[in-house]
Amino acid sequence: MPQKTAGAGGSKGFKGSSQGSGSGRFGGSVRAVGRALRLPLTAAVRGIRKATHAHGAGESGLGKLIELHAVNGAGDVMITVALASTVFFSVPTDEARGRVALYLAITMAPFTLLAPVIGPLLDRLPHGRRAAMAGAMLARALLALVIAGAAAGGGLELYPAALGVLVASKAYGVVRSAVVPRLLPPAFSLVKANSRVTLGGLLATGIAAPIGAGLQAVGPRWPLLGAFVIFVAGTFLSFSLPPKVDSAKGEDRALLAADEQHLHGPRRKPPKRPGLRTVGTAVTHALAANAALRCLSGFLIFFLAFLLREHPLTGSSAAVSLGIVGVAAGTGNALGTAVGAWLRSRAPEIIIVTVVAIVLGTAITAAVFFGAFLVACLAAVAGFGQALAKLSLDALIQRDVPEQVRTSAFARSETLLQVAWVLGGAIGIVLPLNGVLGLSVGAGIVAAGWAPTVRGLVASARQGGATRPRVA
Image 1 (cartoon, helix red, strand yellow):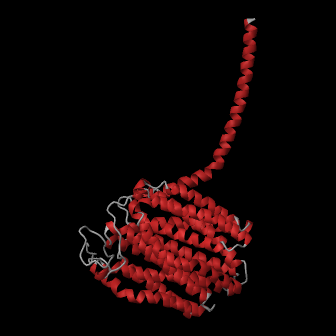
Image 2 (cartoon, helix red, strand yellow; image 1 turned 180 degrees about the vertical axis):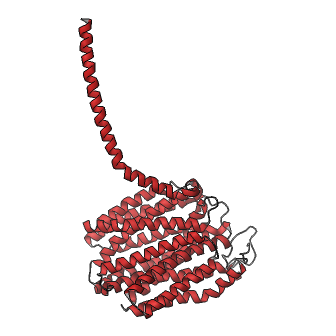
């Protein structure tokens, strides 16, 4: 009996072992398939994390900001694709000009008034930078849903919602500019840090743009739903930045004025403790030159969008023509960012003078010998010049503006550059669709910002930045 029981038990044990072995092999196969399916995604995530966190960026928190800026760029381009399809591509050219003009009047005009307020307003909230960035992300997530409903039903709420997206996007940009100096890794220049952040946003934009176009082909709501998901993720990612981002220890507000009379405003006696400082003549001249390039950027976006829709590049459709110019501009911007990281902060005044002169020469050439190739070249050179000149402006702010007011100077300069972009867009929308005339106006915009600043920037370069701003 004991043997039989043992035999039975042995038989049962053998049978159970066989079942366990079979289920184990099945479970192992399922896990192996799961790992194989996850491998491309996890490998991509590890590769991105390795790139964004390299050279101490992970320890300082700069890597998190790079990832957040990539999320910001991806979400913005999703909304841009949806708005362009709704306002621009869905109607004939003449009607589209009227709709875009209405869009500019309802959104850009109020934004032009609000933009100068964004910097000073956020400057008063230095302890809530992470919350401000998260708020900008969450606001755009909710507004994306509003725009999705308006796009489907043709409601007028599209325009105020689009204005809200613009304001939230620029608020994020202002805060991001103020945050970067707080997250510099050891031996990292501010130009290199800004280059990495900008390049991360450009790469994300390049990846998200075709995805957004594919979602738009499925339905007009889908890119906006995609933007909602992306911005919700960005809301949580904002709070993953280091707490030191919210610290305002030792900071003060900066004035974007270089003359002595604006040093203390109406007060002629210096304050008892260090207070407001000027940002210096080199910075103000560099800001004017950058504003000209940013104005040209806004002008080219709107003017070429309508020009190429009505008169596509030779042998191409309107969509392909716009795609060629867009790719050229994006490539130039990425190349300018990469070159800026390589040059670091070497002679930023000379870099600005040189790149603006190159853009001006290209614009004049494209106006005189108007053609498809030169239009694409102008878009690429303008993107290159804008990126490199902005990085050089960052280097000047780092060099000439005291640390106590540096974040404030970044916030205010970014606001002024956004206003210049809006002004350029308004000029582009009202011009007749004549390529030679339009590019001549673009060259004039660059010349107006370049000519008055050359002498001051060259003089500052010769002095080696010796004219530092005085302590108040």
